[in-house]
Image 1 (cartoon, rainbow, N blue to C red):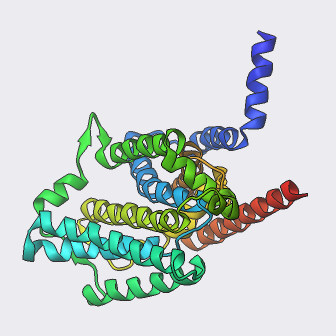
Image 2: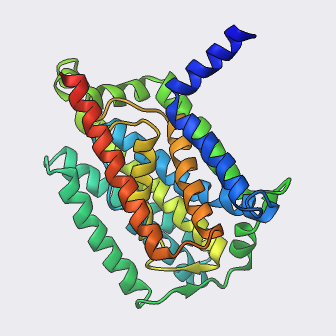
Length: 316
C-alpha cells in the first residue's frame, strides 16, 4: 500500500500539469455549487472543444518550431462565409467554401514562410490583420444571423447528452495523437521542430512540412468558425478575437515547447482543460471580464517565461 502511495505521489510530482488540473477542479467544485451542474459541464465541454480543436492545429505548428497568430481571424472569416453564403448557394457549398478559406489562407501563410523564408510572426500577424479586414468587409462590420435551420440544429445537437462539438474534438484528438505518435509524418514534424539543420541534412523536405503546419492550423480554425456559427446561430467578424493567444498559452502550459520538437496532443488537452477551468470559474465566481483579461495575460507571460527558463537550463 505504501509503495503504491509513493508511486502515486511521484507521478503527481512529475506530472505537475495534471496535478494542477486536479487541484483546480477540486477547488472550483468547492467554491461554486453550480460548477458540477449538467448545464455548466456541457458549457465547459463546448469551451474545451472550441479551444481544443484550434489547439490541436497549434500543437502541430509549435512542435514544428512555428506558431500561427492568424488562427482567430480564420475562425472569424469561416463563420462569416458559412452563414453569409448559405442563403445564396446552399448550406453544403457554403460550408465547403468556409473550409476552403482556412485551407487557402493557411497555404498562403505556409508558402510565404517555407518558400520565401519570412518569419512566421511577421507573416501570420499580417495575415491576421488582412483576414480580419476581409471578414469585417464581407459582414459589413456586423454579425450575420444564420437563416439555416439545419446549421442551427447541428449547433445544439447532443449525443447521449454530450455536445456533438465535444465529440468532434475527441475524434480529432485521437486522430492527431495517432499521427504524431505512430506515423513517419508525425516523427518528421518533431524532427523539423527539434533541429532544422539536422532535418535538412537527413533529406527531409523541410519546406513541405513547414507549409503543412499552417495548412492544418487553417483547416482546424475554419472548422471551429463553422462550429461556433452553428452553436451561436451567428457568423461574426469578431468571433475569434480572443482565441489565438489563449490557445498558444494552453498548448505551452500542456508542455509543448515554444522552441519546437517537444509536446503531444494529450498534454495540449490538459493545458486547454486548465485554461477553460479558469475561464469557467471566473464566470461562475462573478469576476469582472476586465480582471479576467489581466489574470489571463499574467498567465501567458508566466508560461512563456517558464518555457524560456527551461530552454536555457537545458542548453546549459
